[in-house]
Amino acid sequence: MKIIISCFLLTSFFIVQESGASETIDAKRISDIAKMLPEKPKGCGSPITDRDSWDKLAQTPEYQSEIKAAEKLFKTPMPEIPDDLYLDFFQTGVRRNYEKAAGERRGRLATLVLAECAENKGRFLPEIVKTIHAVCGEKTWVLPAHDKDKENFLGKSVSIDLGSSSVGWDLALTHYLLGERLDQSTRALIRKKLEEFIFTPFRDAVNGKRPLFHWMTCTNNWNSVCLAQVTGAALAVLESREERALYIAASEVYSKFFLKGFTSDGYCSEGMAYWNYGFGRYVMLVEVIWQATDGKIDLLADEKAQTAALFGAKAEIINGIYPAFADCHVYAKPGDDIMWYVNKRLGLGLKKWEEISPLTAKGQIYNAMLYSFPNSATLAKPFPSKNAHSGIRTWFDQGGILICRPDPEKIEERQSAFAVALKGGHNAEHHNHNDVGSYIVVLGKEILLADPGLEVYTKRTFSSKRYESKVLNSYGHPVPVIAGNLQRNGSGAKAENIKTDFTEAKDTYSMEMHSCYDVSELKKLQRAFVYSREGNGALTVTDEAEFSTPQTYETALITFSSWKKMDDKTLLIYGEEGAVKIQIETPGNSFEINEETIEEDVRINKKPLRLGIRLKNPSLHFQTTIRISPEKKAKP
Image (cartoon, rainbow, N blue to C red; front, side):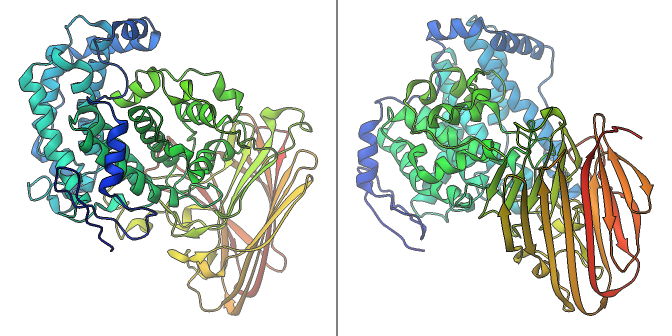
């Protein structure tokens, strides 16, 4: 680690710079930023005293609904968060019990504050104060799952996580929006807790009094989420312009690590749900800094940021369905508010998101404020237009993801269109599943062959036992089982691109996968995808394996739908509206189908079904071909 020591104007901050960032945080940069900032702190949105703005919002259905929701809270007891609820995670490994109660308490604050700002009658203030004191009375705002060795809970140290920084920003905005409507002791309590739980630990990390938090130099969603929430809180309440400038300067440096988590083609290996979370907060970081500096600092001007912004548009399979690779809900979609923002800022010309209104009163206070008031997307000129139109395919060549679609001009009905997502990549991606060679098949608006998506998070999920889960390891994906072995972990388990050949009629993507299996006898394992646009479309998946001694081979189909065996080599998988025919060929060998429900707690109301295609006889050489095509008959 390289350490840069600088004098921070009239204070004594030492700035620590992690090796690998493109620039240092020094006193001059902080001083330059300070000159761009307003004399007084300013949060996103407008204070309750701006009645012209708030009275207009109060007439909207979104804020009328929030007022009604706040009224119901008068009859709803404050969620209790006793010590044993926090400690329950360490005993059971279950996250949802504490997180549900904490989420309800913190969501209570957002509802009450937004309702009070809209209505301006003072009737929600007592409940707001009560909620503030309850939240500020908690031993820590850090989630149990992020509290290593219970150090925050026991008061041994103070760290900053996704949860604590979110609480911090909402409390800071409560302080800013309500201003003197809150009594002085409550305002002082907010500032005290922000200093204790957010500002002091962050400054100490930046100035070298403690190690950098892991998220400051990590390349996943933690980086952008925590930076946005910490910086947003600082800009809303810290009196000194120089202090506020420090947070912006730090964000300029450390947010670059988040962007490094995207491949150069803009692929987000965390999946669409975490793109919403991570890049969604990056957008918020962009916006709060843009507003604070009157547009003089714009993190979206970064070319890598603009490339990452296109992921939400380019990753669509068809009909609003997106891949569920990695820890992603099966039907996750890009957030409308994020897409509205990047569409406007980058001049993408995507009509689907031009026609929506981003106004909202849901979620955290900061989300509502950023999208309910004018922002850079409504006020600034867009960057030169980017190509975000997906066409018949999207090829993330660095991420190893190919999405194939029919020609929209040649299909009779888009609602019955046949499209696929095909995955290469490696097994050390962000929120990784061991899924090299996986694929998803969509017919119309139904996912008929699926990736099972993420499991409900527990203590196991992010531990050394992560890949015991049958939806996180390769067993729950449509990939081979070689000599009884699942895919191994790590970046060394990767797809080597053999061939890509894209035409209007068909797309071919083939890969070598033998590195994914710790099987010394395995000499070759190649998977070839061929997507045809002829007729109603088809996908052919061909595997070829070679061994030094006879071994066993199995592959699988994963679905949430029903199925039926039509004959010895043909299956039908059908949903509510359509079906696909599966034709299986295994030259020189016979096979059997083994049906198994994967008994993992997934984030969908159905359990995934695994149809194992198991070759009966060990061999030196295997070849399997699975042809998938639409079937007119929806159900047998």
